[in-house]
Amino acid sequence: MQAQSAQRDTHVVVAGAGPAGLMLAAELRLAGARVVVLEQESRPTAESRGMGFTARTLEVFDQRGLLPRFGELKRSPGGHFGSVPVDFAVGDGRHASVTGVSQARTVAVLGEWAAELGADVRRGHRLTGFTDLGDGVEVRAEGPDGEVRLTAAYLVGCDGGRSTVRRAGGFGFPGTDATAELLLADVKDLELPPKWSGERRPAGMLLAAPLGGGMVRVVVSEHGRKPRERTGPPEFSEVADAWKRVSGDDISGASPVWVSSFGDAARQADTYRRGRVLLAGDSAHVHLPASGQGMNVSIQDAVNLGWKLGAVVTGRMPEALLDSYHDERHPVGAALLRNTRAQASLFLGGPETQPLREVLAEVFRGPEAALLLAGMVSGLEIRYDVGAGDHPLLGRRLPDVPLVLEGGEETRSLRLLHPARGVLLSLGDDPEPARLAARWAPWVDVRSARPGARSADGEGVDADAVLVRPDGHVAWAAGSGDLATALHRSFGEPAH
Image 1 (tube, rainbow, N blue to C red):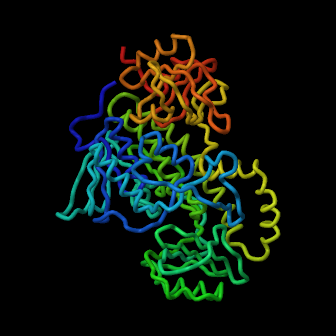
Image 2: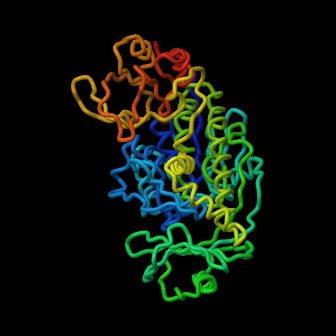
Image 3: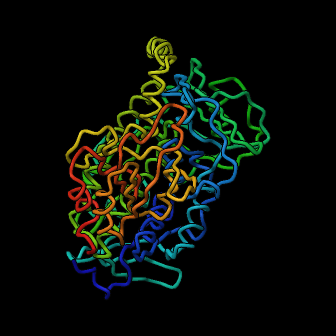
């Protein structure tokens, strides 16, 4: 298989240097692809925006060795589904999310990592248009010194809910417009008791969440408040006035750090790929930002796409591999819209929904319901179609469990994924899986180990051998399906 033309300026152009764009850029570099990121803002965001990570995103960062870069991480002391309290830390606590990490911090960490890996991030460059040439794409942008033109094999839009790439690329974006507007402010100099799950009043809903460092996030929704056409964020006085109308309390003396508004629009791109143009993150799906899912799902989109696109542009895999990106991630986006729409009904509904909230509050107290909802909002229940076989690990993420490698070195399964390569993990006595996988040595690491202790909830790798994709999902398990077929499907032709 021949590599993509060396005549192009780069393998991939990514529009947008938010969490999805930077994560994708880093994953592409780990796969050996050249990448240019175009970001219209001249400086990284200083806005707090998304304020933490779900359990699945923590695993994604862990498998790349990124967690220490974020410093001390604190698990969330509470959780809710559409303002109905849920204990996502049920059981051993691994389903709990992390709070107190601003999106600005996430962008800084991912940007530093992508730059270390060699990604070319160009700030102050606004994408103005592009042309799909059939065998590549020409991208046009306006930079500090005038127009810039770049040729690449592919363009990926990670440029947010108002994506220029999506609109210019002719992607359908079906769904529903916003029916309500909520006001948000991150403030200092305000003492306010936490309202983690929201507090309902006759005139609307209030939420208050301490963010650490003396900062509090307040969100207010007034019944009957319709979306407004805005050219910029609201003034803090508008938030304080709405808070007073709903609660009767005056918060106008607080010091605003970031003020914003959002609605409950729910839309998803009809396809995540059109020819040489792909979408990831908010460019592909917009929704009520419930349970902190938006940024987290966007990062997970990027991890699913990165290794595949990298393999295609470096000539290791056929273009058809990119179809699996839509096949695997579009259903995840559809499920995201479904659960955020459900949460919007609970979150924004008036007195007529109170009986439903009370019934659900009783149901959600049970550990089974809590685990189900935790898996839903964090993506822990995701299982991709990776071909024939019925082993329970197939298509799911490799569990994070202790391992003892040959020679006695103790490690964890996710640590084996730091290089973003495939892994054939042999845990039994049969040498044949390792011998076969060695033919794919440039792209698959063969590791022999014996299991350490099982996780606190009894999770383990219950197979003598597993083949793991670079994104951490199991593509084959011993005793279920054909290993050679799985290797070809994920990694192309063998090297020898």
